Image 1 (cartoon, rainbow, N blue to C red):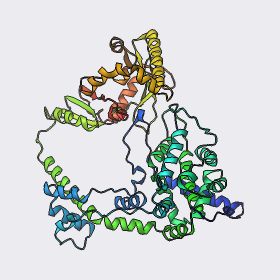
Image 2: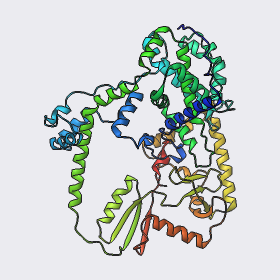
Image 3: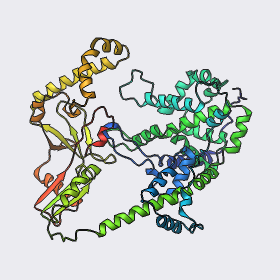
Image 4: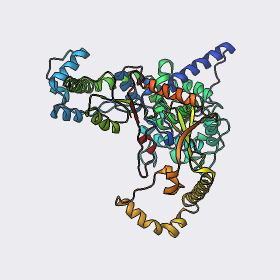
Length: 538
């Protein structure tokens, strides 16, 4: 692919005040864009996060249209799903008509079943430069431009953010964008895989910082005014997993130093790829880009029109659900609870706890239950005996204030476990290392056959990860106890009482307080599940 390659034009020759004004505008743009990316916590502290967390202050239908135009994602169910709700009686003509009336639908008197007909229209995504190249490039290529950019950027992030698992350690000096710039200078794969000519000359003109890249890239790509924000957000949504990780780093509270520049650097990398592809593209691609670059609003309007019927059906389903819930609530037992309950039981708000909570309430009106976040208001971290891996046991956005440690085992047990864990870790590194993995499997693989067969048939109970390095007897001798603050100071009796009182007040249990108060948490046991932390109670 041959394009006219010229050096980038000089940055605007503004005076100092104007240049600072441009940078302030760019910083504000970056702040707005990055604030819309929801963070993703690491697997050892996994929590459920609404992927649209940063957009909760916007109308849902606007968010659906915007996200659809930027990423192709759908926030409504397929039309076939609504037809199934109709068949089951969960969606009725009255529900749909109520939804139409609320929306001011001019055709509210038409047969509601007409909305159920037909199939969903495809969501048309506002294209990037790489999409235009894919639509015009030869079909015999082994990898599309979009796939190449996604793979290349993901591999960069995987190496840069690695925490000791990879065998390759990149030069991280200067941050993510600086790392990208260094390795791009010597990477010949874009020319070899994509057939780009002149790519080597283009990468030499890359600016040195992410903010300079944004300034240059957006200007030369012709992304102006109100289109800059959705365009930049779309580039991050193309790699939303890594963007979510960078968003976590910017607000980290779990023993990390917050990194406010990681997300800015990732955006700089994405703009850099668009700019590089644009500079090496031919005239026909540049012409098409000029035609679509300002089309976000029309793309979002098209998505909203295509989903208008689905949103009416969605609201109808919700109206039907509200009706059934209201009927259930009005058919209550009618029993009056006593002024002071006999038992107050607080359960984790996990849905798995609801069946126990409702069953307990049905036994007596004197039993009062409540739901609360599973850490029960105790912002603590856990340091197991013989380990240096501190685990936070609280919602991700919060920082721990107290520390729970294992008591009862003594220093000798901690030392023995530390030795066992170190030995086990060495074996894992040997078995997983690229030089030894095959020879390890050939030599010792058969010894695992019986265990694999037992686990496959469901007979292997499997030890909890928290019991690693401990015998069953040693595990039973340990008693986790709240011992100190995270700064190491011992908690005296008065501080413990104040903490307990604060927890009860936070759960609205202080007045009136039952004689018996239960805090009911839970754990989980899974095999080979990287998301197991998300299944545990805090």
